[in-house]
Image (cartoon, rainbow, N blue to C red; front, side):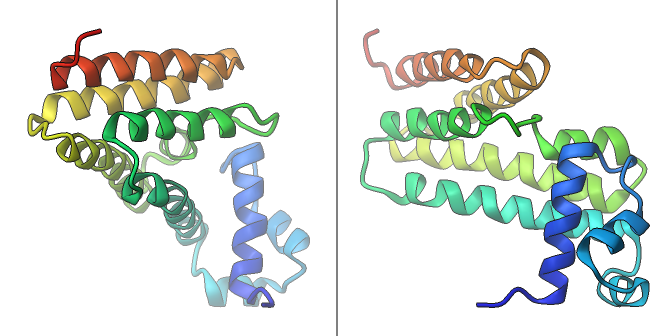
Length: 187
C-alpha cells in the first residue's frame, strides 16, 4: 500500500525530530527531505506545532500497538511485566535509540499545550497498561502500577543518558520484585 502524502511528511519529520531534535529541524528541511511543496505541507499540517503533535500521536499509537499482544496475550501477568521491559530493551539496544520521544518533545516544546497533552496522555496510558496487567493478577492497588511505570520511565531516561541498554534489564528485575511483593509471591 502506497504511503499518503501526509504519511510521507510525517515519516520524514518524525525521523528527523527523533534523531536531531524538534528545534533543530526546520520546516524547510522537512519539505526538502519529504520532497513536497511548502503549500502541501501546510495543507496537511497547519503549523510545526501540529506536525509535532501528529508525530507524537503516531508514535503513541505505535508504542501501544507494540505492547497490545503482550497485554492481551495469555501469558501470566508476571511474564507480561517482564515482556514489556524486554520490548523496551530491544528498542533501547538499537544504535538509533535516543530515549523517550515524549520526554524529549516536552523538554524542547514545553510551551505547546498540544505536545504536553499528548506526552501526558502517553505516560498515563503506559501507567494504565501496568495497572491493567496488575489487575489481571488480582492486584487492585494503584501503587504497584505507579512503581512499575516509574521504573519504565527511569529505564528510558537512564539509557538515554548512559547509553547502556542493560539499565532496562535492571529495571525489569526491579519491576518483577515489585510484582512479587504486590502479589505476595515469595522472592
